[in-house]
Length: 101
Image 1: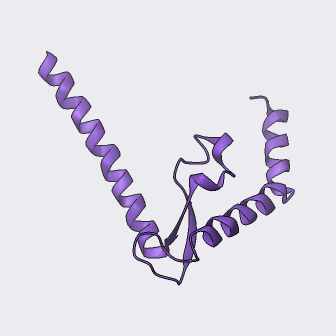
Image 2: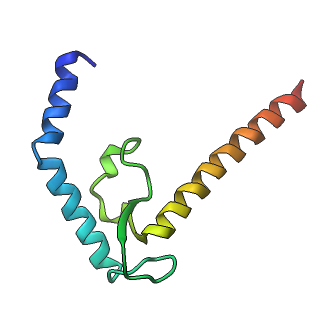
């Protein structure tokens, strides 16, 4: 991407258009989930979580079905679990490669 392209993306995100859409998306996700954490049922410190990461799946960024309401604690645990799963996948790949040789 050219420098002008990067500047255009940054400018667009700073303009508030994406920020407003992000806030609307988060509000709609939380309303759909009755403003409670879908893991523990908590009702404080809620976050709208992207099931498929918005940076890897930009077309799903504002799709309500790609959202899940989580409290802060469950959100943190969710990321730790995903990180651990990615590491386990890497470990499995390494073991599988080692076995082939």
